[in-house]
Image (cartoon, rainbow, N blue to C red):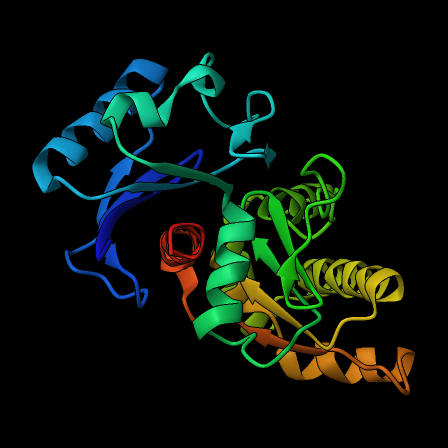
Length: 266
């Protein structure tokens, strides 16, 4: 197999593109607002498969995935989504993977987590996803739920902190801009959110003792990496993890799902 069709299905958008075995795109990435019903999501899959006629299908999706199956409905996707049989839709060999795990694999194989055999990735968006690489392999736990922690560093959490502080503005990036311009309440709100992220990373490293942690997702762009790494160094004198931005950004799920597919179909 040389080219497969990869999808990244989340609560806000569905992305897809044809990807080759090196993780490079053979087509442009198409992005569509996530439909509000499962039938329209299925129709997107069928339409793209008919258009590109790939040799296989790789799907990165929100939700817990184990043994190529979605374990229940993700909170941010429509009713019945968990019942979609992606392989039947396309008639092709299919890999299904959690989106954070797929993104982590992309960073491990060709991004910021290369050369680290013990590492992790957090996706900082509306919610927080987590993928783990231990001893050079994705770590799933007994049923695929490893890393599914309620990290208090999401966009939802930042908006909540802003509301509690009496700020009318809940857009995370506007809040960050206000903080950068010296707005005192916005600064305190942002610093509280950054402190929450710091505590999440400390807990993660205390349990797993990793070499590096990559941050992806939209909120990774507003993280003060210099401050964060300095604080982590104070906590971990001998095993400080390096925290860095992910390289693949919004396309990591597509690339990682495709690379995992090719790993399984050598």
